[in-house]
Image 1 (tube, rainbow, N blue to C red):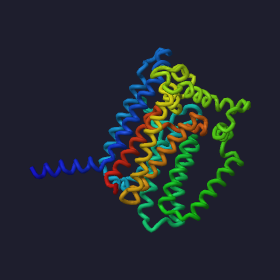
Image 2 (tube, helix red, strand yellow):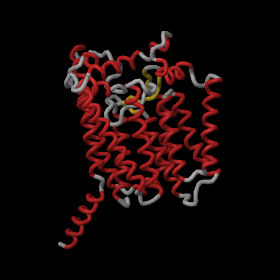
Image 3 (tube, rainbow, N blue to C red):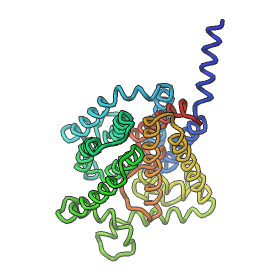
Image 4 (tube, rainbow, N blue to C red):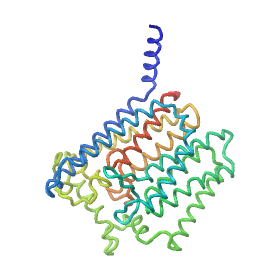
Length: 379
């Protein structure tokens, strides 16, 4: 009897240490995303004569699977990731290489493996693997990072960065650079060395533009949001989807047109309204109130990720939570910003809301790792 009591007591302590508000917020956001994907796609599918519940069923499966993965990872001691970090990293690089030989292409990019019922995007998983790799490497050097350590970490990041750039997937490249930079700062890179790295990075971008390594269409995609009223035909084509997105959000007013309503999202005037531009469906159908509640929910998730990072028991937990915080926060800020015309269109999904199995699994897995950190945090 005492043994059973001890087991129940241990389970209760585990539940008490788990950051339940973060877990519930991520579950609610994912389920809300399923609803908005369904609301944005039901009528277009009906009009085309297809199953109107297709995206509802698929995204619902992705989210439920992601929630299960999040819970399982929250139960595992995050220190065990150190054992598998090299395997994760090499598997991620192998996946990025494999895409060029066996992957499928769409919209001019070759980023996915098609497995029949699902498409896997290795670059999404590589972001999480890089976070694990950097956290593992840095925690083994409590005295701080030397020039040699920084060089090794740069190589560690540069290999997948180059492969992702070649797909091309500029949005994920930006995320990887930001995550690596933030984690290296917290890991103890000396300020002078970090300043040199920032200068070197800026110089590299400049040289890439000068020598044509950054293609013209990529540069225009990153800068077109600054010239949204330009009469240049190339720029006008690039900002077409942004203008429609802004128009849809503005049409929602205070209360919105209502779920499954709204001409611009349900009739397909906003391209990719189930993936990159899912936020426009929230704006048009639920209005200012719906968008503000969505932003507040995302801000709460970001806040909890940051708090867990600040109070982690050790450097590995701190760096894991910080990497996930940057991943989540920048993805949300960039995606919402591009639909409102204040950020470039970079193809970054809205966390836990955009349609897609890889993104849902990665964000929930990342959340599960941070929840594991929270069980052992000093909060």
